[in-house]
Length: 196
Length: 181
Image 1 (tube, rainbow over the protein chains, first blue to last red):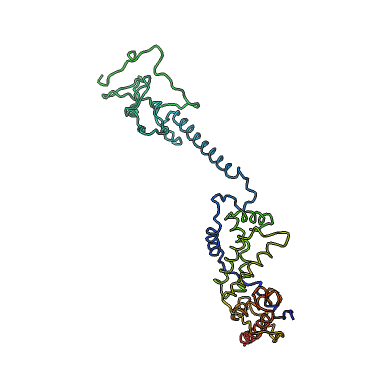
Image 2 (cartoon, rainbow over the protein chains, first blue to last red):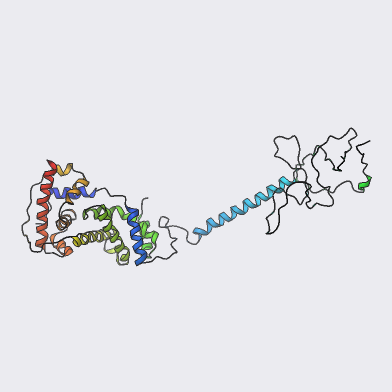
């Protein structure tokens, strides 16, 4: 009496293959909405079921640590690059070299230090009234006049001093050198006026 | 993603702890299975979606009562979805208690026609049955329940269940002949 007919077994087999509509998202939104009412979930839902072997307390700590280390590395790497660029004097005529600024006052660097609130960053042009070391000359506009046959440095009417045309870069970062020769004062330098 | 037993177990534990992500993962894993069951008791896709959503809410609420030693999770979910499907039909069906039947008719049906039909076409024919007859036919012919079990599930007598099955077979024969012609 309870035996199924042949065509009923066929129907049962066919219905096993019934295509299912893609309504999972829609159905889940209804389920979760009702569960939020009936069984509110905790906010701490960091257990991702797709990663059952997530490393517990180290699961999130390790990526954060890596990001922090990378950030520190790039920060210090940038700072060290900037200081090495700052230490290299310029060599005009070297097309392959990056643009090199003439030796500047040590207080002026291509990259500004971290700003403090209320502190203005100084413009990176020489001779703008920036702080300068008393042992160094004030920075002058780069006229680059050719030295005369005697190799004497000429001064124009404005009193600006031209820098030597060629500055050889050292392989090692240079330390700050004291200006002039030990024992010789400024007045000892013979300066020939232009008019003569 | 192929879900391993270990993954399903994690989802189960997470669902018991009321973790939404685990519940969602478990739902999506069993969605196709549950939807296929629900469609057999529904008149359209939206009806089936209602059955599935209600069934899964009951599943998550009663997950603490599931005992793996008494049966598989698959079988447990199937029982809940089927019961929900039958409840869904009962809510809109009228079971004629006055009619009882002892001998069920077995009209001849051309099996070759059914073999040529697709699953969607067959489902469309079954959905044309009246709700009560539809419920009994699917429970008996598709799910394999006997009339005693159907009577308990639907709250009817075994005679009424047999009557509805007989009616289902007569109607399906006419529908299949109409389809064939």
